[in-house]
Length: 406
Image 1: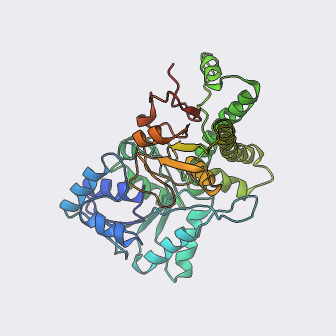
Image 2 (image 1 turned 60 degrees about the vertical axis):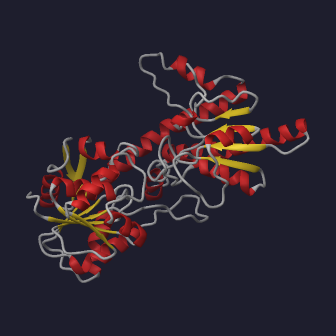
Image 3 (image 1 turned 45 degrees about the vertical axis):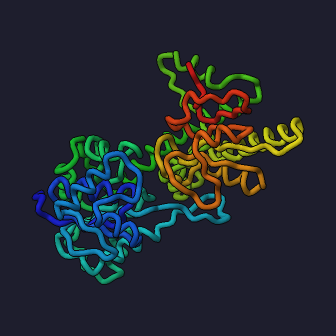
């Protein structure tokens, strides 16, 4: 595929913007689209509205070269990439249902610009059958899709390493036809150094969900183990360290739950499709959600104990709000859920998150101020700034391994 082709990227968030910037630096002419006017304005200045290592350099170079431009309306292109959120619906349904409204909106907004021969790629993590939904939505919009090529290619990147992994990681491409698969694979091979693996769209969609569900199950084992060890008076971190000396055992580090736009969401897409048979996957989700509630209760109990022993309410420093170390991403963050639950129950909470500048509803303070003013220090995210801190004289609750020294 020739790099003089035009690409239109719908959604300029944590995946769309890095992808658009990478494509522009590879030589493509890229038009990025987002509903957030502020994000569009910032990008057109050659700057970024999210935190991700090296992304600023890529965006600045792409905009300066004239190969990347952002707007709120799509433009004609040879390749359309849909990189929009796919959260689940927050309601009373015991099995969270996927919210595909953003995907449908993305398909509708490009409908007036789709032409014969175009490639339309869905990158958003989605339930099985969503690529077909994109095609069907365009048909409902009156688009002749007989010679339009639809494919699915899920992102496989780690926040904090996105610009590296977009290039180096293997990709799975699945089209609604063999021709679509081949054309889409050829497109990705122009900027991906990893292997581009070819399949059908449903297998590619399921592959992404299975990858994250597998990780969720592994984390659930560690989190359940930490709860059991707490009741038995066993140091779970030491136990895991010993168990992992077995050559075929690799237990993960427990945390305060599971967050992010992938692992905390994707397993529900499988469960929603077949709740009768997705038993282990559903149980893992429930274990990880329960771990978050368990942590909240443990912190509350520690605060009440402090108040009884000292005759005054405890000041609690929640160390970390992001869903994983050394990033600013708060999506589905269990750490944020802990801080907000404590605040809602009228505890005196200081939020310490060195990767963001402000957060409405919580008192955000520096690491130094949090340590100085808090009576109880609760480690929720293992940010590099939290490792080896001096917490002498404080009640310390560590739910992420920040205080592990060996």
